[in-house]
Length: 407
Ligand SMILES: Cc1ncc(COP(=O)(O)O)c(C=O)c1O
Image: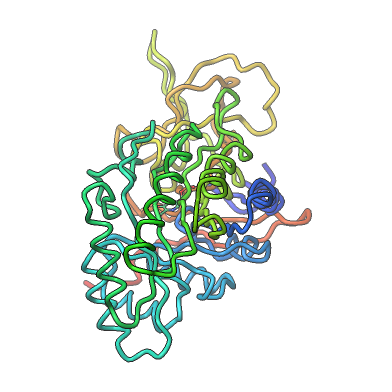
């Protein structure tokens, strides 16, 4: 309540201790399977103030654009500890990333090999690269969140022979050094089995590439994507099982790749549960016989996930979390789209205009995808650390939205 009064709503509040706890959980889970590097997937939340906490806790960074690379650098991550992904990296972004001395470029097609090859011709030290492959593994998640199937825009298929052909092309290109392979199955994965399958595929293919090309492959990027529980009944895979599923096939059946460094790149696993969103209740719409809509002062402009792929959250009313949750309601956003419903069904105490509605678990892919739809300014963000709150992004003003425009 106090934060909502002080900073206004909608307001996002990140908790530094939760970030550190999540990071420790990843590092601990993978410790017995080392060498392992955990790279934070910056796309989940590119806020510099949040990245700085994650960087200080010792993670690497996985970036999907030059913008994310620069944001991560501002957060303090050295470029050498970053991997640059992307199925369509623009020329200028690739060139700038190379100039910044990005640690690894993840190749996602012949277009990357050709352009990178031209850019690194004059370099004395070769640029380390990974090849992103498509293992042809479907995971049980929303179709928009699948990335490991053959019919995906990401990755070069292994089964068709294309990935091996790409690996040959890379090893034949002066200035590039193929040091690793990469694959990412998708997001919100709730089962460890596909990860074990992925590790098997990747290690088998890495051995094939090493034998065929003599590329010094010693790194296996296994992506991110593990679901985190956002509601009390959400079931997810434990981190220890996840780590075992990825590491055992490498360490036990990996042959020449047994000692490879495994890279994981969680996004939501680090930031998802580290933030809550605070909204003011504007009013409630009641229609006889139907579930009421509790309407709040934010919505798809700050969190498009429910509208985009049916993400589900829970909510509470600040100061009345323990009061009887008497009504089943939907939480409607303020944006002019009927799909702008943040929560389709949640039990709440009777909401009153002016109440602060809290949605936990909104740290990942919410503000990262925020927009100015309806010309709504994007929310302020506060970091809670060591009992203190600090504004790490001020609320936008209408002038901020128009500052690039001319009549
Ligand atoms: C290549 C890659 N790695 C890692 C991630 C992080 O996934 P998550 O935030 O679900 O852990 C993503 C997200 O889409 C991704 O595209």
